[in-house]
Image (cartoon, helix red, strand yellow):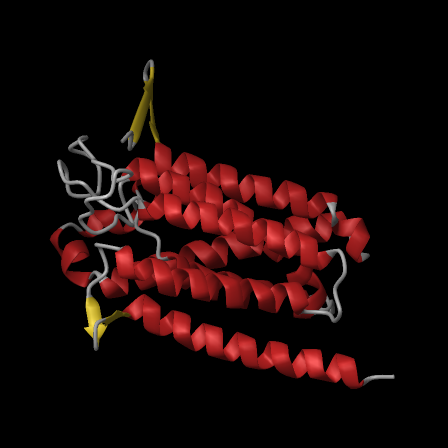
Length: 253
């Protein structure tokens, strides 16, 4: 693929560019809907700043923790986030915690803000996964299907010359579908937090399935990867809270 784009004297890392574009799109679109949720648009932009910092910190920390041997060889790689190597679950955890801290500080509803921003997080995530595809990170297992992809660029993070599952595209498509579902549900929410919780349910289910085709994450327990175990924990927790919230809403007169 194209991990690096050269525009004259400029060298651009495709992964970093697309992740940035995805995040920017999410901020702008969420800001445009702020009034619908009775939230000040400037608060959405301020919230995005704290989410960005917390997400990058969490994403990099989990990536380093799960690949210590790789980063020990060249510690300078730790700061090269533009080349790839961000764990989404680490970023999700950091972003959620950072977002909750800011929202609580401003005395706003966490559920309300979650319903506002999470459809666009899914959209930004879809764009970011295309960046993964260009960089070769998050690559799939060897595949004999007609839609298999091969990475030939020596700077790609995926094994070169092999037919692999395009897992980055699988997830980009799934994330975009999640975005559409969340937008649809958000127009007729039955309770605050419904969209917020539904994101975690849908994404955890998607990640659980796609991990079976990933070639970069080793199994750690009975054939399951670390990220599948995290997905199961998130899926069970979010689904439980969703059902409780839904029942409480239905029981109200």
